[in-house]
Length: 515
Image 1 (cartoon, helix red, strand yellow):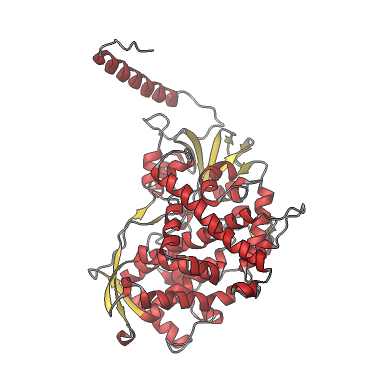
Image 2 (tube, one colour):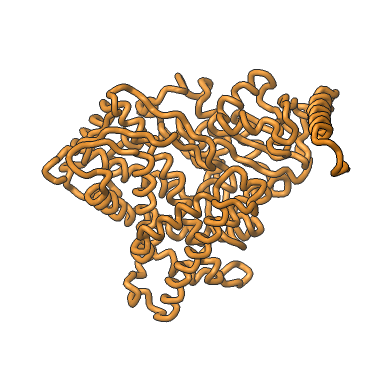
């Protein structure tokens, strides 16, 4: 302990000495011989921080450099945690298809998601309970529900481009990530949650959503309780949004008839479905749990669609020739631009579907999928054993952007999918408790994850993106601001990889008289 009477110069010297010793010990520890069962360690100078900066700024570049030096399996230090990365198809299979007794996602994501989504749901409950919650939510993702969503989504987009000041006049420029964030919030709320919730999306509610979204900051992986301004706003927004949903639920319970509240029990009413949902053990979902699941559903429906749709529009603006191909595809295969879009029309638009597929390949929303190791896990065909002091990390972007699987992988080319025929492997199907799905863990293309935590909303996300983009293309021509082929760099600082903002593109109405 330092004597308070010690001259400040001595204190500074003491502090510098401790710092130098700490760095020296850290370096020496890394140079010590390691067990053959331990994957190689990525060298780092700063204790605790480790490789957090280089990983956080550009994970694709970080993984690429580490792979060149160490191969597909290596460990790096991330804010005091030992993270073992296993790249490639074998890595995706090993991690994402890991047995529940060996790996879990709750210990990794629970601290981050619980303050945002709420307690006793998603990663704040046992996995078997989460699987049942997924089954409850899957009610709103049936074929009947998906078919009903297309006209609702189209209507929201048309209303937005008619009333938003961002699209005022016959031409202009727009910060497209900001516009797509608003559009996808409106489409997700209207389709997945109904007219009641959509009416609540006033400027005040949208601001609450924004504040809640700020809870997804990297620092909250380790300090979700930190008394930071964004965390205080996160907690206030969560409380207010929960209160809003509880008001809707109480109104339903008071009337006991959804028609009296201005809704219809047509088989797609999510709130009504959750009000009647019961776990296998007989436990009924509490109203608070329902409110928290509705918050989760809104954020899940909007988050990835927001960043993905922004990337799609940026890529299209850089390729106006593809924009015109898409427009002609709709004219040739569907008909008049004024004709309302139907679910059955989407299969008539293969290039549009390929634009979405290719963008999800090049611009994956999530670059890292992590699992906490619970038991020692030998890696097949290697000497390595991954021990419980580690977190495992799979990175789908490393197969998406690998020339072994895709020719010229860094080039955005929707036509690469023209002759690809996707065949579902029935032997790969498994039921984790919410219906049979494909594990998909050995595919080089994993835009929605794989295994038991594969996104159950992928069909809605794809439908949402296709419907939004088709509606925009029918009404606008898009180019870059300077007419050159350009897309912004990726911002990896959020939970979802997104374009660096602002990212402006130029738009021009196809039918100016309707402006």
